[in-house]
Image (cartoon, rainbow, N blue to C red):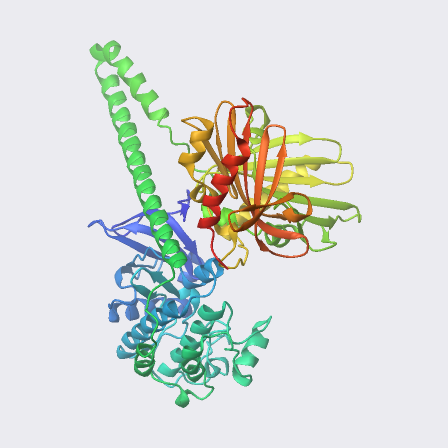
Amino acid sequence: MKPLMPQDPQWLGENRLLTVIGQGGMGRVFLGRTPTGRLVAVKQIHRHLAGDPEFRARFEREVQAGRMITGAYTAAVVDNSADPENPWLATEYIAAPDLGAVIEEEGPLHLGGLRLLAAGLASALMEIHRAGLVHRDLKPGNVLLTPEGPRVIDLGISRVEQPDGQLTMTGQLIGSPGYTSPEQSEGRPVSPATDVFSLGAVLTFAATGSGPFPGTSTPQILYAIAHSAPDTAGVPVSLRGLVDACLAKDPAQRPTVEEVLTATAAITAEPAWPEPVRERIGAHRADSEWWARTAEKQSKYQDQLADIQTRRRELLRWLAAGAAAVLMLAGCGVAASRWAGTSGHPEPMNDPSLALTATELRTLDGCKLLDMTLSGKFGTRKTDPERNIFGDCSLPLADASNKNMTFTLQVGAPLSETLVPSENTGHTVGWTPIFGGKASYNICDRSVITQSGGQVALKLTAQGPNGDQCDIAERALVAVVRQLTVFAPLRALPQESLLRLDPCAVLDIDKSRNITGDPGKRSAIPHECTISGDTAAVRLALVETTRPDSSMEKTQLDRYTVYRSAVDSVCTLAYMARPTSGKLAEVASVSVSDRSGQVDKCARAQDLLTDVIAKLPKS
C-alpha cells in the first residue's frame, strides 16, 4: 500500500479513503472505510476511460456481477456510483495476499494446500455459475488467500452466459494469457467450462510455480493453449488426473465445478495452507491493519489541523471586529498560528512512498532490479548482472561513447555510514531523503533509508570514466527507488533457503545479551542480526557467500560439521547449510567478539550456533 497523493480524492461517496492499494489498467484502487467502520476496496475508473463506452460497460458488468454474488468465496459489492464523470465501485476489503505473490515468495503449495485451494476455487466458481455468470479471468492475481481459504475477486470481465465471441470490438483478447481457455484464445463462445480450464491452469501454477503452457510471448502462449499438451508433470499424482481433465481442449470433456469439488474431497491430505503461507497471510493482514490505523490517524490529524485553521480565521475576524480585545487576544492568535504551523505532518511529496516489507528486503532480487531499471536507459548491458559474496549486485554497462560504467546495489549498507546529516543532498525520492557518501574522480554513491521493513539502507554506487559520477549515481538511485514503489522483483528461492529467514528470529537474543551485557543494543540488516554491548558483540549472518570449507578450519559441533576462524578478539563459527553454485553456499555464521578478555568466545559461539542450526529449515 502507498499513502494518498495530493491529487487523490479524500472521499468517494460516503467512503473515507485511507491509502492507495494499487493501480491497474482500468483505474486506481483505494482502501476506504464506510460510515459504519467497515473497510472497503474502492476502485475508481481513470478519467480518460470514464467516457469510453466499452470500459463503462465492463465497469457496469462488474457492479452487476458483484451484486449478484455475495457468498463466502468472493468479494461482495458494498457501494458504487455510476456518475459519468467519476464512476467508482466499493467492494468488501479482503486483507489477504494474492496467490501469484505467495507462490513467487514461498514456492509451490504442498498437497494439503492444493486441496484447500481447489475446493475453494470450485466453490467460488459454483457460486458464480449459479448466478448465470462466467468469470473469464481466473488467474493467480485474482485469487486472494485468507486463513479460511481462497477468495476470487475482479468480476470486471465476467459475462452472462451467451453465445458471444471472446474478442472485444477492437480485437483485444479478454482474459490473461497462460490462463485463458482454447475457446477464449480463438474467439469462440464461452461457458462455465471456460472457468474450469482456467482453474486447471491456476492449480498447475500453484503446484509447480509455473503455468501449464510455456512461452515467452502472448501469441506463443495462446498457440500452445490451442494446440499443445499441458505440462503438468510437477503436479502431485493424486491431483494430476483432475488437473489434466480440467485442461482438456474440448470444453465438453472438462469436469463441472461440482465434479471438481467432489474429486478434491477424495484427496487424503488435510486441506490446510503450509506454515510459510499462513505466516505470509498473517503478515499481510498485519501490514494492512497498520496502514489502516496509520492512515486514519493521519486523517484525524489533518481534520484537526483544518479545524484549528478554521478557528484561527474566525478568531482573526473576531479580533478585527473587537478593538477592545485586540491586545488580549493577539497572543492567542499567534499561539493558534504556531500550533497550526507546527503539526509535525509535512506536506506529502508528489511521488509514491518507498515501502518494503522485511521479507521483501530479504528476498529482493537486486540483479533483476538493476537490469530492469538501468539497462538501456543508462547504457548498454555488456554482461549479465553479477552477485558478489556479500550479496551486493553489480551491473556493467557501456555508455553512449562506449565507455565502461558499473552500477552496484547494496541492500543493507551500514546506517552509520549513511545517516550523516552533512551528507544529506537535500533531494528526496519515495518520501525519503537522498544521502551522499564517499566520492572520487570516478566513483560515487547515493543512499536512501527504508522505513516500513525496518531502517535499512539501499546504497547505489556508480563507477565509470572521469565525470560527474555523483549525478549519475543519484539519477540511477531515483530510477531504482521509483521502480520499487511500483514493483519489487523478488528472488525465486527454495523453501529451505536461509535467505528467507529473519536472523533476529533465529538467534537466541537472551543468550546473546548474557554475553554482551544487558541491555545489549540490537540492530539488523536483511541477513544479519547483531547484539552489541560496551565490550562484546554477537552477530548472526544468514548469507550466500564463499564456501567456508575453502578458507576456515574444519571442526565438529555435535553431529554437524562446522568451520572455525579465531582472529584476535573475534571467534566465528560457520555452518554450510546448502551449497548453491560454484564456490558459493548458503551459510549460517555466528561471530562473538570481546575486547575485555573475559568471554570464552568460541565456546559461546558454539552454544549459539547449536541453537541456530536446530531452527534452520531442513532440505
